[in-house]
Length: 290
Image 1 (cartoon, rainbow, N blue to C red):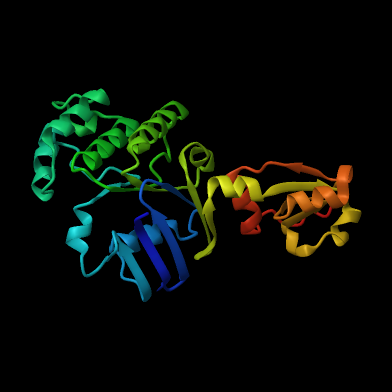
Image 2: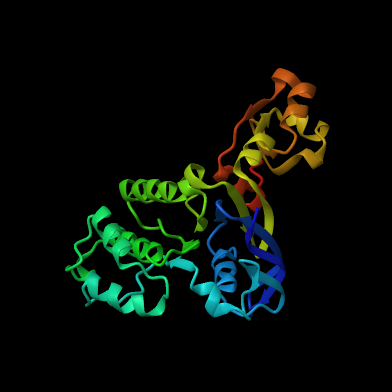
């Protein structure tokens, strides 16, 4: 299987933030959900992949090529969908498409028009007349019209109402059916990723906390709840982000089956959401010693 994106030991220093020793890999045909709180480093990772920022150390390869040495070749094969509109508001959609077509050797005008029609976008309407959700659809149409093999989306559903978000996610799911496209989808709306992500990469404070398949994550982790007296009896290596209150404790459990066998009905094990995993790993659950 071809590795489309690979980062090894990538570091980037800012005045008040450090992206430290980031390593991740994504194979063709898969969708990676890049999750984390605002300011965790998700956008920095995307900008490094796109060579909009220069790394301080490490290696970044896209389609097996160094992302700096082969930047032009790589960007011909990438479709980027920003969280905000980057196209001229005062131009008609058909005119924007005509201008963008000059930058891509594989631009497919027929496909562009097909996607405009599919998304109910009038090619003669000015971009300024579209809602945020419709502008997002237009950005996706552009990304798909030059046969992009890798689609990178930075917070694409942020600010969209639930109906538009569902429509965008269903669209992405359909796009992935042929197994040829790869998507990196950055979001702090983790419920969106429950629907489409094959791989979850959790970023916290500039570090990769975990990166694994969604299915493996759902098999491995459980939210464990029980009485306070059990906290000191459970192997601490099993638990992440313990929260104690006057009724008992809860934590993310990395060894749910072992905990169930050892403590039986004295504990409750629940399947976590991506948000649960993100919150427990971030340490933001705190200690609620009431």
